[in-house]
View: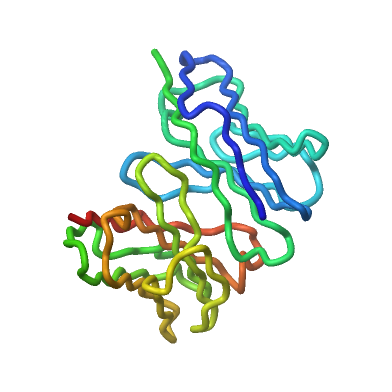
Length: 114
Length: 116
């Protein structure tokens, strides 16, 4: 069975500061890893994904994440926060075998302070 | 290109009733997945439909059922509603079985169900 742990249900940063959202996963097989963002009253939008290949993945809106197999982590970062980044962020994992379902973490609410 | 659309956006039901939620997949996508997102939690996989057949199911009871139609749209039916069924129900589509070629699911904005 797969699982995802997102450390910190709420994270606050100042505008212009580094954003770091933590995600650790558990999977018995090579994983696919994803970060999704959810704005209020909207569905989920894909930020970035790791399937195979390069472990540093760049996504939309200046976000990136690094797959570290030894640490079973896939932390999301952005060098400089913008007010528009305020949203809920979900890390998700799927196994490469079935690729039929995503297992999501419980989410991290990001607040950006002026 | 039309994205994933869901209806209704909001609805209120009472315990014991039945509900049907609808989803139109993104153009060219033949796979539809349904997720339940309770308040303050991440989405949980209910099931997936590919070519009108159930193609995987999460840990949900049989009173959660679905259909996929030849045009790839889908319905989620929930019978004998319980208070804990109150949640945002998200539909997601993708090209091909599973995640297809892109490894990405395209989500609709969801249907918010309140059970009283």
